[in-house]
Image (cartoon, rainbow, N blue to C red):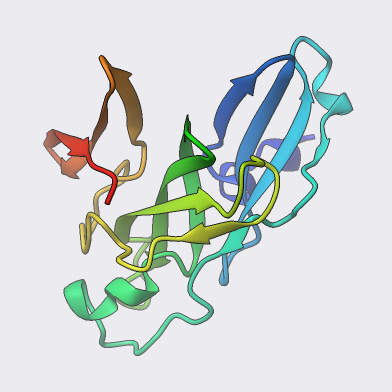
Length: 180
């Protein structure tokens, strides 16, 4: 049915393969948003996927915040409406995720036009256990009407992690990720 493929019901998903397992990360619910996870065997029909052990993995802001909080003033609510577009990598004992957060419209009658990029990591060595969000979120902030900010790609080259993501409606940026 058409409702099954409603983009905003699950928002753009992220995938991660490890061993014989395929993990699909997708938004669960809206306003407030949550990041969910499903797992199944690689090659098995999609109907065989089941929710991960912990579901949801983490949640976004619990409220929209003040209506007039736009730009930097609204950043702490950046992932209220929708969380999506997960990209996951494993480093050591943790999994790390870049994700898009959407606060919602900046004024009544507009479509969603407040986007930012957040980071999260698994609390322990299990991908389908609880996750925590980075306290410095959002890491790329108050992007305004920038569809695609969170369609980030994390790529490791010779031990260096690079984050590629939209930094404006017309620019794609490359960042080096450094563990502290």
